[in-house]
Length: 148
Picture 1 (cartoon, rainbow, N blue to C red):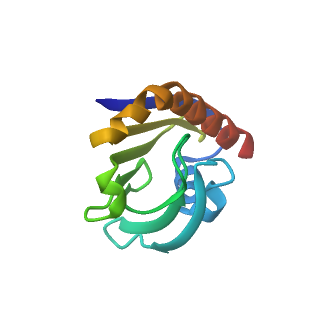
Picture 2 (picture 1 turned 180 degrees about the horizontal axis):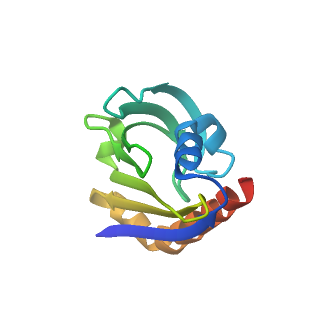
Picture 3 (picture 1 turned 90 degrees about the vertical axis):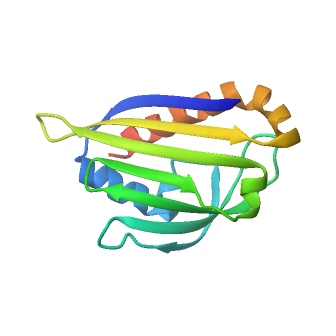
């Protein structure tokens, strides 16, 4: 089973400003409490690719380290994907997307989504995480909109 959550908001900043803020994960964790600690960020390179090492926290699970690869499509979309061959891939696969569409006034319509695919016995956590994750992503976008 896959858990998905999605929300959208109008943000009083350009898509570039929004995505640059999202790439600065030390700053972005102010709007996303699931990010506990940022260990390192590499990139984006000339092709918009990079990776980040973080400690993340999901309801009911202990904080855990993970590496996420990311791809930036300047300045419209940022996609995070759980990197292969990481201990967290024994528990879940992950994709997170922040997509921005520029509005006529220069601000951005931001859509943010998460997709988690839990594995093995960890699928038992899915029942408790669906509603919680939807609430988290809504709060995250609300905090993002207030930031700008």
